[in-house]
Length: 485
Ligand SMILES: Nc1ncnc2c1ncn2[C@@H]1O[C@H](COP(=O)(O)OP(=O)(O)OP(=O)(O)O)[C@@H](O)[C@H]1O
Image (cartoon, rainbow, N blue to C red; front, top):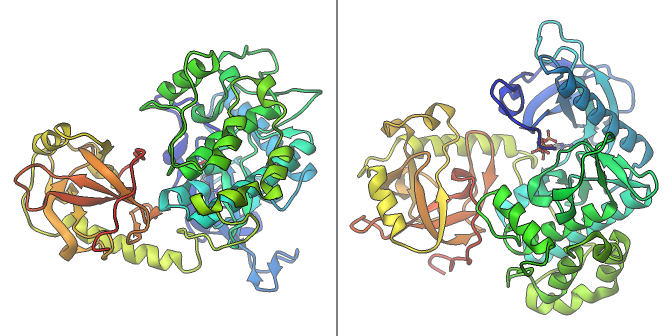
């Protein structure tokens, strides 16, 4: 769910450090921060000692995810939205449990008079997932995984729709993955129960996944009308992303520009153009999901799509797309794997060394930009997760970042080019390498994706490698040849 943002709001990162590890929350003890969304912050937690409700499984204490939805300091209308959103999550969790939906264990209101920011927050206690499809897309999904993942998403949607619900916010961030790789749909804060053929949702959602009809849907007293076909549209976008390295089928540099492209297509003013990387079977499936009107999309239910996948149509394409048979479970790489915390911290230390160490030529931003603008290809903007470095215009060396010589070797001082880059620099990337050395940034984001970026003429190296955790951009680029391969 994406809330409007404005000056002085208390959403997102402002709240990420609210609950320190060791803090007791109801019958649970916080172990680490997982991430933050627009209205909520999610923490990992274990059962508090002495908890006797079967929370401990045969393998030891069961870890859970605590979704904390603070209401303190919000305007009454915003607070009401949070409460309604929590009610929707709880109602769906109680009435429509399924292995393809993240399990909800309990919900309560947090009493924390010593922490005014979360005092009175709504807490949802959920099954903890190992990672999300977004992380997997960033790291690079293997061919064999793709069909299985899409089948899992269809199973979850088919169950939701059969149970009379519309998810209304399907996107890779809300498609979680269990430790065994199984798909678990989550974030039912916008989910709505159908009354007849429609449900109603607040005028919110994630722009990149809204169907054409949502862009002109009138806002009534109950909210905006949605139907299951809205989830099918979002599924079409996700299918495309899974095969096209995370790229949307709709062109545009921003979600609003892509939204305009969606509307042009919906009005019949532009054709649907899918990336050639999407193999024929999946292209046909995605095209049906992305039919421009509700009426044209309605025959393509999650159930019917699942039947098409199960009927083995995917198998025909396997020779060309490498998509494996749906149903085979595999491990999910991600920061939340067992032991990842330890590895993450070690790698963060390595990254810090690269950030601050390695003497060499320091190029001004103009030099870097000049090298960029002269060349075609995708542009990536450098992102430095160190907050203190984001607003500095002085290009202090302490805030510079290194580019690797070889993305298959550890990202450490001996493996960086002399050219340094800073937060906000624009670089030209000409290809992407999904299976490089894993890098974890200061915020524990992990990715094995790298971009090959060009360096200005006269640099010691003509090109170097930017780890994907160092940019928020994901341009659609061809795969790079494996260095040294
Ligand atoms: N049960 C869970 N297990 C593990 N990680 C989770 C779980 N629920 C959410 N997360 C992760 O926590 C982070 C924050 O989730 P949250 O639902 O608060 O926001 P979001 O879905 O990222 O954004 P928004 O809902 O505001 O659009 C996300 O990275 C999500 O993948």
